[in-house]
Image 1 (cartoon, rainbow, N blue to C red):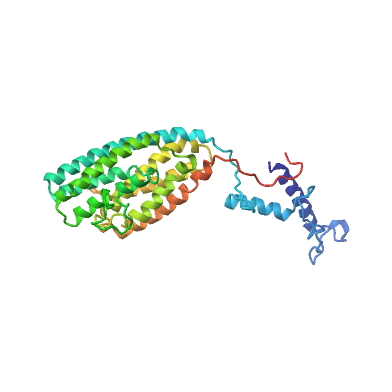
Image 2: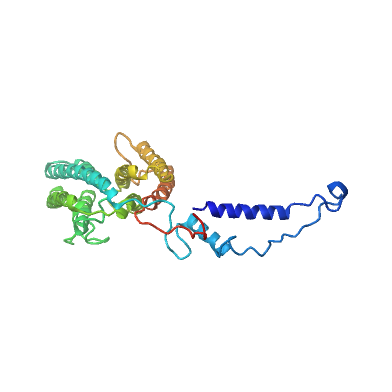
Length: 346
């Protein structure tokens, strides 16, 4: 589409180049160059080229439009523009179907884990119960891409239904966070059994709800970025795990869910700019970092995590977020305006 415009610009460049080229005659016999150097030759086009040659399109406006598109993917009116053909929203059905199958498997595992935790609360040690909670919560965090889809049920499972400052007397203080609080603050193990039973019940409700949940194309394309962003803010800061400090465990599980979402989207990303390669590169770096932190199958708590590991994590997360931010625009489902066309351009 820009070929004609490029030819026009090249033609103008040739004219300008010729006009600015030093004269080799300068009145000297045989075209020789005067010893004091070439004389200045005024550019006849200087200050007079205000429109794209052969059109009524202002040259400055055209250049600004193209620059805006390249730098911000929107024109000067704030309208989205893209060089990529849109993808049909129907093509997201298969990735979402694959994610739902993945989620179903992890929910099944989490239900088994929560039942095992209940048995430990009835006759095990606190150390055993904490390990059982780690297993159940870590498996639950593998769901990743389900957040925001199930409303109050999700808040009940997370234990955030009562808000960020919950009280033990608040009836909404349930789920994984209530169990975490009890296990790490010395509450009697058997007193936590009713909350474990509630957790198993709510997990089964989640399992029943997954097949019917609707995830639209844009929502699914942005999942990976949002999961990593939330993990950095809520888990690695310790905000969502104030008693166990298991932010590394939760973030590693969240990363696994991002890798799953990315894997389902790879067929759609293939051949569309370099987004696939960028995302794969940064997710691999994060994955290797977490692998290096594992000791006998366990991750360190946030309080045990070293300063260098924190630095590497923050750096890799910044890179991963930048790469994942490219996914929605690479997989755009709407047709956006191209840069302005020059009259007569094909």
